Image 1 (cartoon, rainbow, N blue to C red):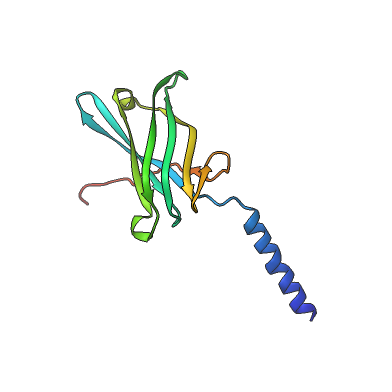
Image 2: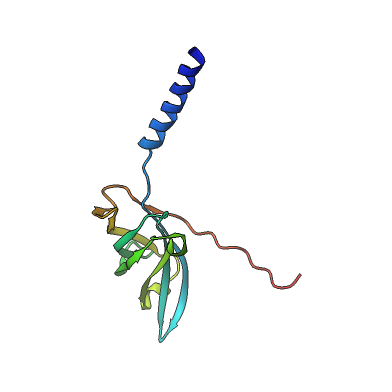
Length: 142
């Protein structure tokens, strides 16, 4: 009986720790910036729903330069994603002349979505997580 009780205690403790940890509904990262022509660039932001259905995602961002000045702003929007593993990921874009600058910092000012059928403030609920993207090194030839 003592062995069963201690095992149950360990399982209960692990379950409590998992429930206390924040669950991220949405994870996102800057995946690339491309030249869009006519002096414009397009920054691509990739979002991972974590297999939860996300609707009406709106992430309000500002681009801050090295001097700390806001040089651009916009809203990253995705109508719906995450209904299945086939559409777990989605992309949104921030475009403009200022986006061509190097070393910008993106600041999220507001983030909302419908998660589990409920309108959710992703910042207040800590359900938005930013991930640093590390690209692969590419070598051409041997």
